[in-house]
Length: 254
Image 1 (cartoon, rainbow, N blue to C red):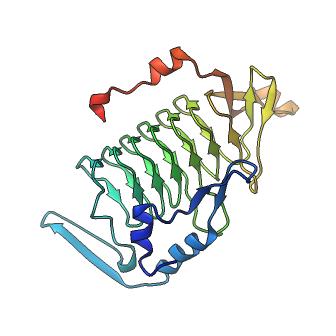
Image 2: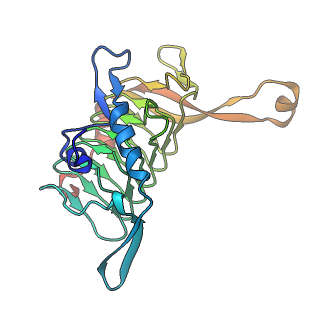
């Protein structure tokens, strides 16, 4: 790592998560980068920033907020906070209030809508739409753990929650309210299979999948007696022209 870790992260020269064609799912975590970010938290000094008389906040001195946005990035005022050490590609739009944590990488042309959380070291690709209320989980510890990854051109509907290193492949569409964790069961209706993952190898949502929230009945007499069911997710089809039309975002909004 160079001495100016945040500058390297913000420029994209350094990334916590990298494409890796040799990896089973196409990605690898650079644990050295995450360890370098963790080193910043060992500095217990605090500092108060007061950009205006009516607004001030306190954070770790070594984790200052990002104040220099790249050309072409638009952050609409109204309560958004982007921590230092975050990469924002050209054409990114962030609507208020949203929070982007240290080490996150957001690709060019992505829309981050209101009340979105992008966690530490999470990786969001280019041309992605994160709708209102989306939670993209990140992770710093342990350094080798994978944060959530959303590949290019995906659409993540309002209120979706992605946690524990879930990987959403290119062009997938998640309907509003889908919750995915490392071990969520994902039922593929078209191919009649059940996809899941582990904490060490989290769930992968196939490219171009259209995913909706669903339920599955729980086993056992007590569950049957009371009609109990667990939430799950269902791939209902692959992305098509109709899906593209429904998820298109007016260019003017970007």
